[in-house]
Amino acid sequence: ETVMTQSPATLSVSPGERATLSCRASQIVTSNLAWYQQKPGQAPRLLIYGAFTRATGIPARFSGSGSGTEFTLTISSLQSEDFAVYYCQQYNNWPWTFGQGTKVEIK
Amino acid sequence: QVQLQQSGPGLVKPSQTLSLTCAISGDSVSSNSVTWNWIRQSPSRGLEWLGRTYYRSKWSNDYAVSVKNRIIINPDTSKNQFSLQMNSVTPEDTAVYYCARVLSGTFTNWGQGTLVTVSS
Image (cartoon, rainbow over all chains, first blue to last red):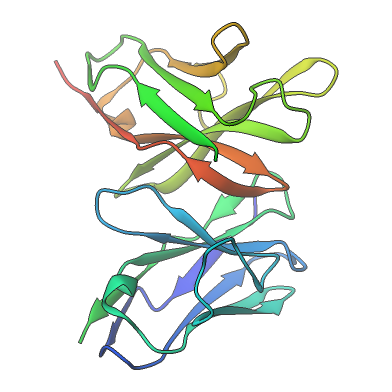
């Protein structure tokens, strides 16, 4: 199965700063890559699909890029509500698989 | 909008069967364009997809290799819901279990999650 590797495991960022999260796939997933946000005690929420398309209601400060095996989620100016864990997920190769997550914490 | 409401016990004894239900509102379990999935999350395994059920002229299921011999996912069209049964559970099956709707490969809607603890 396709292994998704996220880095770093933890990212310490000050409010208002930019955050850059990485996701690497062990096999080509073309652009079939999604990003999710999960806050404590909540289910994951879809942020980005198709590598760069924001889901309904997702603010423009969230952007995705990449294709093939290397992907990036950028949060342009971190707000207090953005401190959470972020997961990538590929849906190109069966079975679909998730990364282990990047925790974005307040610096 | 689509909402998923999970129900089921939070404590299961070792070797017994875990049973959870996911009630759907705002969509149909018989929809031809989505699949209905179960995922679990634990510190050791992260987010682990378990299986799905879906309707495309007939009902089909797919299961993760890791649990294939122990789980059944069933649709219930009369109640517009679907269920998960996992037998012979061990403490390693302790996790938060989620149901989710998947459209074109992405998990668009999730249930609220159920912490299931396997313990005597």
